[in-house]
Length: 172
Image 1 (cartoon, rainbow, N blue to C red):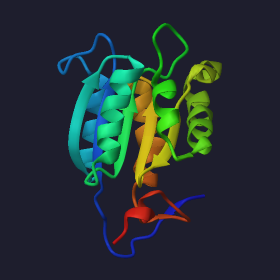
Image 2 (image 1 turned 90 degrees about the horizontal axis):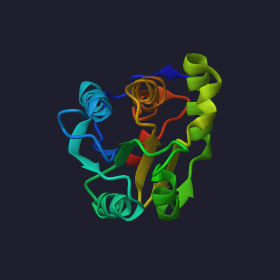
Image 3 (image 1 turned 90 degrees about the vertical axis):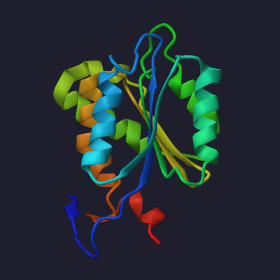
């Protein structure tokens, strides 16, 4: 069981949010808005938000730019993780990762199972570390973003969460 240990106050991280979609715009991007709002409400800094087509090379261009930016600690994407049509976020991201975090996808599907049942098996949520940047790829539904942020990422991106968390690697 994880807990919260307040040892020195909250340390905000610099987070970028990417929506992968062939159809969404800033006005219709509910999932990206949910993630951006969650980031800001938790006290982190939303340093960039973008929408990119579900195209492996367009996605890799944005991910690579953010991975190379030493000011960005974390990238959270939404969309393109399913099994239909052009869903290709895992194919775009996995080759860029130095260290995949298999447990993220496993945990996301387990938590989702409680909410949507066996349909959770269709999620290809992935995560990893590359160039000291954490990457988390969530499905495109607003429910999946609420689940991923609220039940996993919010705690894991807070250095006060015990027994361990991802934010510890950014502590000064």
